[in-house]
Amino acid sequence: MENRRRIDYVALMLTASAAPMPIPGHIDPVPVPRASAPREDGRVDLVGLSRDEVREALAAAGLEPKQAKLRAKQIFHWIYNRGATDFAQMTDIAKVQHPWLAERFAVGRPGVVEAQVSTDGTRKWLLRSGDGHDYEMVFIPDADRGTLCVSSQVGCTLNCRFCHTGTMRLVRNLTAGEIVGQVMLARDALGEWPSQPEGRMLTNIVMMGMGEPLYNFDAVRDALKVVMDGDGLALSKRRITLSTSGVVPMMARAGAEIGVNLAVSLHAVTKEVRDEIVPINRKYGIEELLQACADYPGANNARRITFEYVMLKDKNDSDADAHELVRLLKHYRLPAKVNLIPFNPWPGAPYECSTPERVRRFSDIVFEAGISAPVRTPRGRDIDAACGQLKTASERKSRAELDRQAEEKLAALG
Image (cartoon, rainbow, N blue to C red):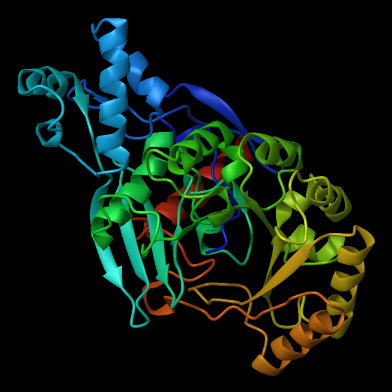
């Protein structure tokens, strides 16, 4: 589920009423709607709000400050620790107050369009936002952990050529509530309420779903702070990994303001090849990216930076590539682990996966240099849930064709 993609469409298809906001692409800023539409019923959804934000919402609705503070603490516990979706479940709040709360507030979940289960136990959900946009999340169970792969955008603003999500246009950023809502829904499906510190199936989160998390920084930061809150979902920052294709200016902020583990979608060791397959490299080159990794707060041998490297036949998989990868990591003195990812095919993909023998040889070269380089076992391929395969089922070829036609018209005008 690598994630990096650039929009292949521009503002032509956006609604005129959408408030534009520049999202940096690797060539031009891309206008996208600023946020999702408010709920049709006018209520405020509390999922994704911190304890202070819940208090502020209650106070704005008319509760006096001391009452708002007490109720916020209770509601925060019920939402994030107990998984409550109905105020009537909140037994330590007076029954007479339940209707007042229900009239003004909601405790929502993403809409589920489709839920699939792979033969290997991987689960994928196609979700729909309140304003009708689709996105995906994936849960990967293992013997000793369960990892939820969370999306941060509908579509993606990058255009990594090996990634299926990169063939989608960017629609908008997900809100903090929509990001947290994915975790809540997974907990619902796994039956993991009330929240427990031990014995959970969902033990880890990776921001490796649809989208570039660092192009939606504020919402991702705010969502992960809620997820890490010890009185709620209580997931340690050491069990959360944020993956970026290399949005260098935001990496230091991510380390300082979020503090979770860092993964970097590297995928190549030369400018020529990385420019092709990870186009953000044209804006922030390999050396600049690796220096930002070296400067990442909290990175050490106990908390290594993970470098994702998808194996593409005759493109980035030679012995010379492996040796150059080792040289770069050692030159920048990076506490590193390299995840070698067999390329997961999708219709129309321009690449093939390296042979198993070539992948093993590449791994051996990196391992022999003292750097961990495990080969990731593909998971969920049969339901298109593996790395680089996420693309909402609602995206039809006709949409892609319309996008291309729109671009051609703009080019002709231009």
